[in-house]
Length: 242
Image 1 (cartoon, rainbow, N blue to C red):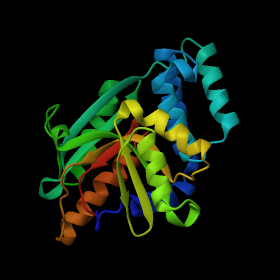
Image 2 (cartoon, helix red, strand yellow; image 1 turned 180 degrees about the vertical axis):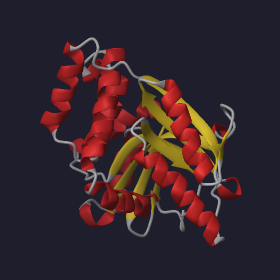
Image 3 (tube, rainbow, N blue to C red; image 1 turned 60 degrees about the vertical axis):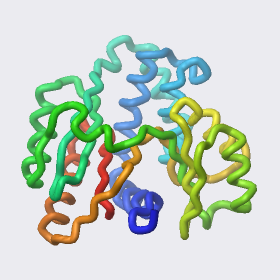
């Protein structure tokens, strides 16, 4: 995985997100509300909510803030009138991009997301045009500096609790699982007090695209920055080898 360290990307994002933590918490709050509306407020009986709670904790969202969002959604039938929409498309040099949105106005979301692609020299494609190039996985990233556990012990703990792969990088450990095993795996690591830099069900590229042209790099960054600024956008996945 050298050259596209997930942990390096996370650190970069966290540095950016520290200045915009309110935006991150707003997006997480929206996801919590939607999950509660779809499956109820009990984490033990709502696997989607359990995944979002794990993601919120990995982003350092306070427990009382999480609890308030869940209670608010459970008590307000109109709190989460959002529709989940996924867009797929291409950036410079054929890079693949998947955008997940939660919106109360599909037309607005579609127009703004299409505009972000266009301004960066990309284009939105048809559903399924790039998603086949990604695998949906539970993914947990552990910062080596923060983890006291030996690599072999961490690997055995992970594999015993549903992990299907364990990779050691220079500065981190990457643990992946089937999405259905993610919550069990995450809970086991939390119980063992393993610090997690990231914990989420995500889309992992099967192959990566390198951009060597400066203009292509600027265009790709423009697409990603515009999408990050869009309120309806929840997650962006791509196969650019940054």
